[in-house]
Amino acid sequence: MTREYLKKATLTARSDASDVSEIVQGILSDIEAGGDAKALEYAAKFDKYEGNVLLTEAEIEAAIALVPEKVKRDIEFSHGNVKRFAEAQKASMQDIEVEVLPGMVAGQKMMPVEAAGCYVPGGRYSHIASAIMTVTTAKVAGCKHIVACSPPRPGVGVAPAIVYAAHICGADKIMAMGGVQAIAAMTFGLFDLPKANILVGPGNQFVAEAKRILFGRVGIDMIAGPTDSLILADAFADPMIVATDLVGQAEHGYNSPVWLVTDSRLLAEEVMRLVPTLIEALPDVNRENATAAWRDYAEVILCEDPEEMASTSDEYAPEHLTVMADDLDWWLERLSCYGSLFLGEETTVAFGDKASGTNHVLPTSRAATYTGGLSVHKYMKVVTWQRSNADGMKPIAEATARISRLEGMEAHARTADIRLAKFFPDENFDLKPEE
Image 1 (cartoon, rainbow, N blue to C red):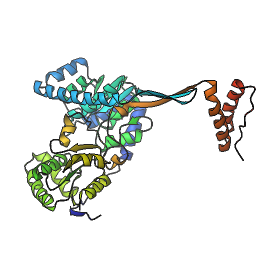
Image 2 (image 1 turned 120 degrees about the vertical axis):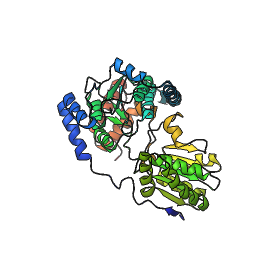
Image 3 (image 1 turned 60 degrees about the horizontal axis):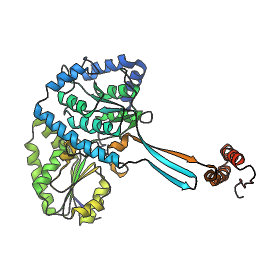
Image 4 (image 1 turned 135 degrees about the horizontal axis):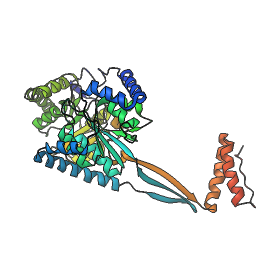
């Protein structure tokens, strides 16, 4: 590899990872032991909110009335796109059956989990789109009970636009609670909710740690770290668009890595010149995040050719991957490790984040090397079944008996023996493994 770092990160997404596990485990244990009352105690402490935990129909309607009509139309537009894409994904998943041997039939069934818990961040930014992404996919999958929870603001409650999004996307209950206490409430089935079978949605490090600790007794979409984005750009890319997209992702948080990988030194240098100016023009809180992310976590990498660019990208396995380079079909075929891919300057990460239809709950911190993002598939259980007649069972039983004895599992072998004896009483079988 001949790649050259024109800008090298001084920190990584894990550099400031504090040990929150003990804190989160303590809260989870307290709430599991103390139930609703203890969850409310933590909600009062951290959310600073003492209103209804589960919004009533009247409260939902009152919140909806506060949402401007144009905002409603935008939410409905996004919901429609996400729903159509999710429905297409579900259609690609099918029950099957195959006759593996004459008389022996095996199959699979696709079954949604019963109850889904959808976490919607509502702190610094009101993640309206997260309500759309999580609730819509759960609804399309066929989950029978969907809870959407979001941190309430003191004296206000859940952001009205989040309430509207969760409501029209199909949430059965909307919970005004955030943080570890919300994750605990959905997992343990507090406030008369059904216990969640799966927890989905982004959150801060405490929410992520709670999901990690609870994984096993409940399913999760993934363990998420700070969001990250990589752009692959060649000499023909528009440096202003490249720079704008880098800044657009850097505003997520002070520790959100953004990376530019290119084979053009001129493009790289121009982008590095533009980014600080674009950051300076942002509102205060956005500027603070983007400044720190660009200063400490961003990288600009110069490669020799497209193949080296692609190899570098696959090594980084970004959550979001944008390609602004010639021959988009080649990149689509070549690239293999990313959460979501954006091809050409006519699309951008923000489109996927908000309204284009693909999901924005995606693998971070190189998790794209082994998993994709949230989709209908995450809520589905692929279960298998089998059925056989006596003739189909016969060779399966013989092989099972011998393999089981070779493994030393005599009781397993005898479950095959008894069937052969019942259905073929006049036959003698060699059911011992070869010495």
